[in-house]
Image (cartoon, rainbow, N blue to C red; front, top):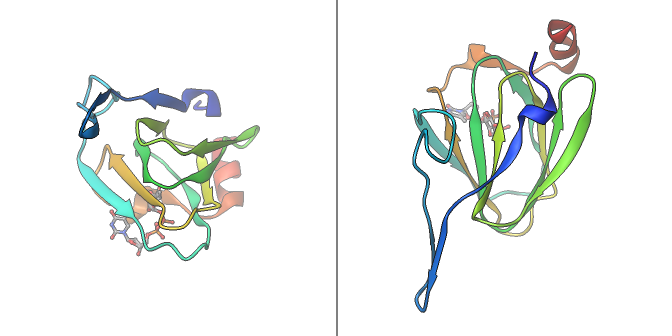
Length: 134
Ligand code: T46
């Protein structure tokens, strides 16, 4: 049974020189899954996003610009994690309810995902999520 303790902040490499900074991610080295999809959310209006869990999907959220909060809930416990550094990503395992909130101006969230998009991997009803976790 997955819990919020299976979700973690992953520090990514950051190479700094007089031109700026560079971070990189290699699958199975910095993150525990193979990357099958990359997407990003941007032009955010301030409305919350998420409000769902995934049955199989693993993801890494990276705040490549700005900052925002992620609420994680496993049906029993919850915590809120602030993402505000492009070299720190949040790994989220399956079966975790997530809500993305408090986006700063021009925030961009880059997401690395372990599976291609499948709507039937989503649980978008919180009561159903809690019921299925039990
Ligand atoms: C997550 C957060 C951070 C696709 O067609 N392909 C895709 O790869 C994705 C991610 C979405 N879509 C479609 C599904 C919906 O019709 O785009 C529309 C908006 O997706 P959704 O309402 O799920 O957006 P968010 O921001 O609430 O959630 C998304 C991801 O779905 C989710 O896995 O963790 O971003």
